[in-house]
Amino acid sequence: MGADVALQCAAAGHQVVLYDIDGKALDRFVSELPGSLRGYRLMGAALPSFNAQELLARVTPSSELSALAGCDWLLESVTEDWGIKESLYRALREQCRPEAYYGVNTSCIPITRIAALMAQPDRVVGTHFMNPVPLKRAVEVVQGYHTSAETLTATRELLASIGKSAIVVQDFPGFVANRLSHLFMNEAAFLVQDGVAAAPEIDAVFREGYGHKMGPLETADLIGLDTVMHSLDVLYQQYQDPKFRCCPLLRKMVYAGVIGKKVGRGFYEYGR
Image (cartoon, rainbow, N blue to C red; front, side):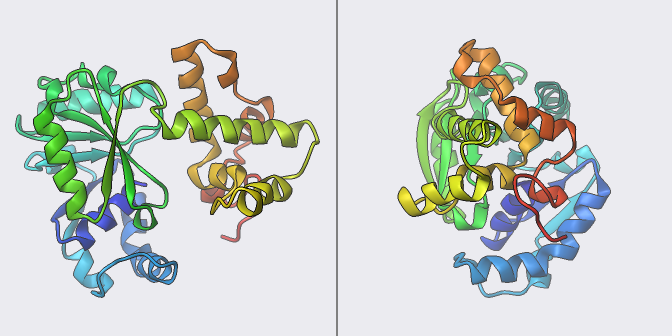
């Protein structure tokens, strides 16, 4: 997700610092960029016709947090884990300029909770990009308790500059997209667990019956079953509602390391 957001911003002409604690992830972004561009163009993404080297000239990969010090916008996409988010934002508070805006790309963690960590909570907003980023025009923009009108305006302007449209919603765990989609993915996992149908049949109902481009289990594999599990746990914790109880099969697959497309196997097998 973070790599695709960086690709989209650089493609729109922005200078981008791509930060990751894992240097290998940064190396993968560089090595896989030509293939990513070709693939997204074949799928119909509206990306300019420049080549990968031109795009890379706009991206500075770094594993040093200090590289973000001069950025106007911080678009964060770390894993859906409160401890990791909290640690990162406390560090960003010390490193980044006071005028910076923070776009939180989270599935379910409340924006207001993250904003409370920052010196200027009014400059924190949810920017929930849809996966895969270059193919999805909409971004769910989440207004936290402190998010200012100025920040919302700046967010709309940034998203418009990269060809995205903002759909503004209020800050409740899961917002709109994931409060709905995670129920679909979780219940689909229960259908597999209970032997009602296999993954291809479940996803076919959504694609061929409802007209969705992807079924819930294909989507879960793309997101990562570990991320889906963590998000369900956050929703359950926040709402204390049993409808968000994570499917035991889904949790078992995560414990087994069978977490989707990024490892080559989830509800489906993928070539690597």
